[in-house]
Image (cartoon, rainbow, N blue to C red; front, side, top):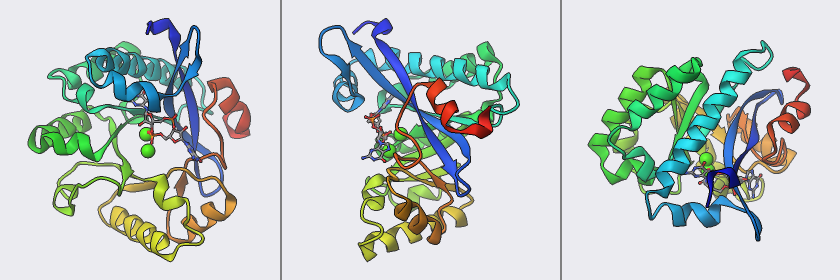
Length: 244
Ligand code: C2E
Ligand code: CA
Ligand code: CA
């Protein structure tokens, strides 16, 4: 895999009014023979080697470049950009230093950058992770817990994690309109997140009915095909007139 074969698509994150509030950077690999390969296929492979570290660094740099662009226009200056961080990348000794460098290089407002961690990243070494999360918070960067509800983290850890956002996994959104258990779980995650001072966003929102059910359960931020597929940046901004 060569770096020029990698590119990033952006998926909208919207609020209850349907306004764009930010995006998630999602990696793609343009394979010379096989076409576009999804990260679900190559990220797990890259995670077994240090390749994930250089790929992750490239995504972080690309996201900060994008935030630098956004900062130049009032209509986009307030948007946040979320970046997925793999466990191995996060656990580099100098990860916080690398984030600091990217912020200094691009001079972006740190609070516009959101790092998405997973429960397994946190559970790998809880004390070191919590310390690192505090350092990142001190830089001003925002932290989100991705795929929330699918891992094994206990509430004991959750209360100690300096998180800005919980991201409800799409597994709970899929059947939210028909499965009362999923609806109850979503309602509980939302209430708990808000009580802990966190923003709550749902992913995998594919229909208006799902969005309305989420809103009914108190969730006011959404990501999913109902709003936009992952697309190139120009396409994303064209979909949301308030950014022009
Ligand atoms: P994720 O972080 O949970 O990202 C959400 C995935 O759900 C994305 O798949 C997205 O395209 C897809 N999705 C979004 N909206 C909907 C929807 O409404 N319905 C359905 N069914 N799916 C939806 P994608 O882009 O294939 O990425 C898969 C995973 O690869 C990501 O899951 C993330 O874990 C990983 N990934 C992507 N980019 C990066 C990256 O830059 N670094 C790292 N470490 N991992 C990445
Ligand atoms: Ca994610
Ligand atoms: Ca996710």
